[in-house]
Length: 227
Image (cartoon, rainbow, N blue to C red; front, side, top):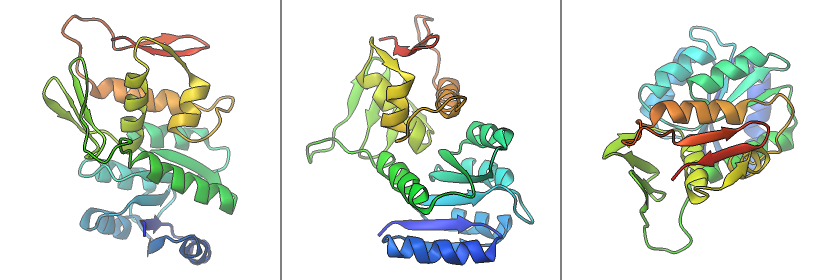
């Protein structure tokens, strides 16, 4: 049973979500202010954290920033509808995805399952497999990536994005394909989620020894991982 943490000061919504998610087979822990939520997130292991932006004591961005300094637990941000800046900031800090309020129950459950699924990537066979791509070693069973012998601290979404790009090295991968494969959602106009995740990933990857970029952007089409 997947363990979820919901950090939201709306008591009514929290209780409704608790009932919904428990019916879907999740075990939910509730926190109603940022500090209490952060304390729980740091002290326990959760499969996913649902994090509201507007919270007392510590807001959602402060909670996420403090969390990312210590853990890479997947985070789904709950933002106000139409507030694009909240979504961009959340993704920049390290959120795995966002969902505007008010949201459809089925969409929430689908997003939760998609994030948990992509942060538990396993190879097809039962034996642990380490993939090597140039100076990168990737272990899906441990969710670990080493580049130039250095361990990279990636979110589950960044890990999934890197894995997908590496598996298609040298080939153009469309943004539409990446959005459906990595984020489990169709690419929508003006949705910058994929761009932000790739930008964060680029910042975490060390420069190549030969000085060439790792990823080439083909404007209006997609990206190519340069082997």
